[in-house]
Image (cartoon, rainbow, N blue to C red):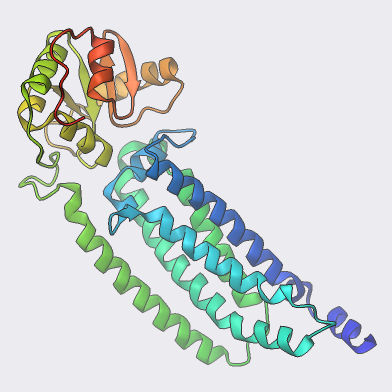
Length: 324
């Protein structure tokens, strides 16, 4: 027992606590990504100091294989937490060989996972700053995404300094291989995902084509909304905007006064969007995101059902909507 105590005292504190720290960070990352996953799956707005979270999280970059990207981040953080904290569940007094063996086996997976997550998060930070911050300034920052990148980088650093690696050269080679595979996979994933921004439209900066059709009820509602001066603010890359458009159908939506807010979007009116954003945020108490409806001087954020649009706009025509 005394030799065990002496070894613990002689080892650097970071070696004794690295697993605890990695596990704690992984748990925080899991909470972060779980929240984002829930908001995406339930189509609810995220609580964020700026509209950057909505801009980034509603873009095509936030969806992979038809699922929220945050869901895959959640699984990655859970895996890191299990590898970091799992061996600690074995009592060193009762079964030290098993504890030692588990710690030895899990360090390499921790390093590989942290390396891949750091590379992937770095690419997402590049996307955020090049595609959103460069156009919207602070309004293009997704604070949840920044937090996740910091978590990943912190775990990567801790895997490097959290133990004495026997073969630094082999570790370096492993890191290079993991980084290359991650970069290739990341580029492949997003190269396949990028066309979904435009949904195959001829103009990549225009909203995707609407594939649903309209009944007379949708058409009448759309004409009524136009007659009362209703406006829908959106962005060509916004999947929720596309969902809103599909509720109307392609015939009816031609009557909607759609305002393109993306500065690089086709026929954009970004100056108008920036002008009304403070009024919308003050009135609704939510960050200005897409879609946002302006009807009779009031703002309504998020996807609106056709029934609700009919109610708040004073529509009295047929309500047997086809696409509800």
